[in-house]
Structure formats: structure tokens, C-alpha cells
Length: 335
Ligand SMILES: NC(=O)C1=CN([C@@H]2O[C@H](COP(=O)(O)OP(=O)(O)OC[C@H]3O[C@@H](n4cnc5c(N)ncnc54)[C@H](OP(=O)(O)O)[C@@H]3O)[C@@H](O)[C@H]2O)C=CC1
Ligand SMILES: CC(C)(CO)C(=O)C(=O)O
Image 1 (cartoon, rainbow, N blue to C red):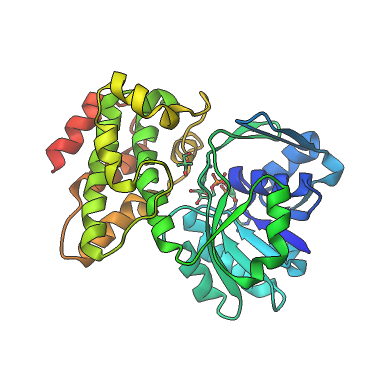
Image 2: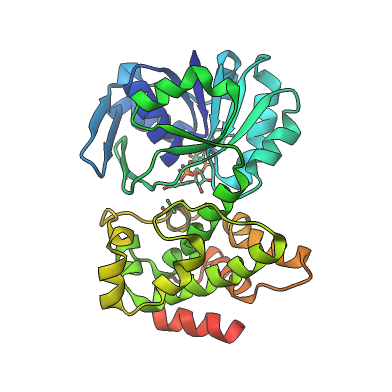
């Protein structure tokens, strides 16, 4: 069974690398700069539990054109959301009949975009709950816990054991949409983290930033209720209780939510990485999804809209490093 990762970056190299380290036949498709990096260093994969795996250069199959997907039985799409349509068109041109395509991306719509452009294939929506830090030199580190979530489908049968052996067990769900919204609630922290310019753990340790996240989540939860969507429970705390927990004073939060702070000290969000690299972020596919949901209900989502505006400003050159109180003031005055 040949597995191809389309869009080898943080998630693609980590997931594909873990599968390859477990003996799966994996090809990564990505950019030349990463091809050069992996040709020099191979892959070095570590996780918060102490896993330390190496895939030597000669075992890293890396290609820079989509043609490599022609032989794929399973394709994992791990490009950023804005690149999904192009990736889908590239796959449509080369995939063999019967190939299964999985979106392992954040946001709500990537699976739909793939399905529209690959109407004759099995396209499944997946979700990656954990953080991957690209440390450079071929090193990728999983900084938080979790396996992989995915829509239930019989086509996954031949791969279940492979993922489990790689240390990334697949949890299959009858309805993946509530799982996606639950993840999106957590991703509402991406702009807060990116604007703070701090590692995740340092940002979440400060109540003012947590109150910013709580405001964005509370707004989203109200809209989800109005839309009849119940987000799945991904953590011990039910999604509806998250804002209350986040608003707690620091000493209580540290005591009651110590698991939420059990994050690798270097971990940041993918949105921070995008801004750091001077790339457009996925803000339209995260907070933008909340604004779209509000519009579909004839409502507004001012806190999420403000976060979009602030990220847009940084994308256009404004400096990062907003303090928690400053960000909170901006969000509160938007309501
Ligand atoms: N990083 C993380 O910790 C987490 C990320 N996610 C989600 O996973 C998805 C992937 O994120 P991440 O791995 O961080 O993203 P990255 O930007 O690190 O990786 C994507 C890679 O794909 C490349 N790419 C884009 N289009 C193509 C194409 N057509 N052909 C070949 N290569 C292509 C990109 O190159 P270029 O930049 O040049 O376009 C980039 O190198 C996102 O939806 C993200 O939100 C989910 C959980 C955690
Ligand atoms: C795992 C999490 C929530 C934070 O890293 C993420 O999805 C991201 O960075 O985009």
C-alpha cells in the first residue's frame, strides 16, 4: 500500500515520517527547499512522550511534483487551507481509480473542496489534534498529545493497523463535523497566539490572553447553538465550559487546567509559523468560518471579525507582540 503525503510541511513530514519509520511505503510531495533539507539530514521525529525516531536520507522518498501521487493508494493532504483547491486539481490529474484521499487540515471546508474537485474518489475528512514544531534540519516535534481523528469509512480498513503501529492511532467518527468545530474552537487561539508572539504555554499562562480566547469561543459557541451544531468533546472539559475555565485567575487556572498547560515550552501555533515565514495565514478558514456562520444566521461575530482584522494588519507588515491587556481592550471594544 503506497501512502503519499501531498503538502509536506510540519504535519505532512511528521505524520508521513512516523508512518515511514514504522515501515510503511511513504512518499512526501513538497517544495524543493524541504527536499534539500531532508536530503541532507533525513527526518528526525520526536514527541512529548520521549519518542525519538530517525528516517535516514536514503529512506526518505521526497518528490517535488504531484506526478508522484499517481501510484498512491492513500493520499494525505496536508497543505494549508488556501492551497487545497490547487492540490485537489493536481491530484485529479494523476490519481488512479480507487485511491483514497484524506484531508488532515484545520478548518471546516477542506474536505468539501477536495470532494468537489475529486468527485469519483473516496475523500475523507480528518483532524490533527496535536501541535508539530518544525525545528529545522529535518527535525519535527509533536508537542502536545493526541492521535488522529477521521470520518468512519470501510476504505480505512487496510490502514488502521499501520497508523496504530506508527503511534498515531486513527479514531473513526460517524459524524466528523462536530469534531471539526471542536478543533476550530481550539484554533481560535491561533490568532491570539500569533499576535502575542509568545510560545503557546507562555501565552496561555496569562489570563488576559485567555480572556481573549474565551471571548472568541463564547461568541462561536452561541452561534453553534443557534445553528444546531454541538461540538464534540475533545478534552476532559466539555467545549461549552472552556470559556469559563479560561477566564479563571492564573493561580486557579494552573491548578484546575494543568493539562492545558502541559505543552512543550517551544510549541507555537501554525498561524505564528505562517506570520514568522511571511506567509498568508489561515485566518479566513478559522475565525472567518465563524463570521460566515454568523452571517448565515443573520447575526454578527465582532470578536472574531476583530481578530481577522488584526491578523490582516500583521500580514500587511504591522508588528506583532501585542500584550494581553491591549488585545483584550481591542476585542472588548469591538463587541
Ligand atoms: N503545524 C501544526 O502544528 C498543525 C497544523 N494543522 C493544520 O495542518 C495543515 C498543514 O499545516 P502545516 O503542516 O503546519 O503547514 P506547512 O505550511 O508547514 O506545510 C504545508 C507545505 O505544503 C507545501 N505545499 C503547498 N501547496 C503545495 C503543492 N501544491 N505541492 C507541493 N507542496 C505544496 C507548502 O509550501 P509553500 O508554503 O511554499 O506553499 C508547505 O511547505 C493546516 O491546515 C494546519 O492548520 C493542524 C494541527 C497542528
Ligand atoms: C494544535 C494547534 C491547536 C496548536 O498548535 C493547531 O492546530 C495549530 O497550530 O494550528
